[in-house]
Amino acid sequence: MNKPICLWSCPRNVSTALMYSFAQREDTQVYDEPLYAHYLTVSGAKHPGRQQVLDSLDNDGGRVVKEVILQKSKDILFHKLMTHFLVDLDKEFLLEVKNIIFIRNPKEIIQSYNKVIPNPKMKDIGVKQQYELYLYLKDRGPNPIVLDSKYLLRDPKLALNKLCSLLEIPFDNSMLKWKKGVKNEDGVWAKYWYSNVHASTGFIPYVEKEINLKGNNLELALECKPYYDFLITKAV
Image (cartoon, rainbow, N blue to C red; front, top):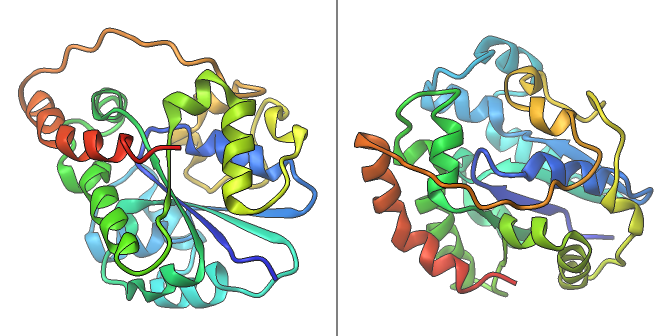
């Protein structure tokens, strides 16, 4: 029996593309942010399509952990999750899964997130939570896998080979391509967040862009920097 895989991402990363990648495997079932409704319920966050999300998913995070994330299956289970959704939950279940902390440069996160929800706060973008999650897991067992999306996009085949090896599953060449458009795996929130990845058929090569943040967004980026600088030293 394979341990479930939990991808703990920050928002505005290429986590959806990575979910699509795993969905191409015949031995894998993927789940799109099963804790999203739990997060919206306990945080009160006002996200686009909030009521649709609440109506489409179980709002009880504890039950989601037990019945969805930790369900027994002969297939590989891949759960795409946001780190900042880990609120008001007993984190002991993390010791029963394989954890990937999926990071991105905070400047890039903030610039992208700000286009959908202006002036994000630390609690919205998950970078500090990723740092805290790393320390929590490191103190309790094997170090979690840390993957930087920049490295994935620069050489998807190499990065996925490394990732699969660390997850103790075989690499599958089908993970490099998928069909364009809406996917069966998408959550109901896809129309608000997934337009770029729906236009793709594979991982889009990384291009470093000039980013000029101002005001609160710049302050947030500077606050996030030490956490990201620490995590990138742990990246595979």
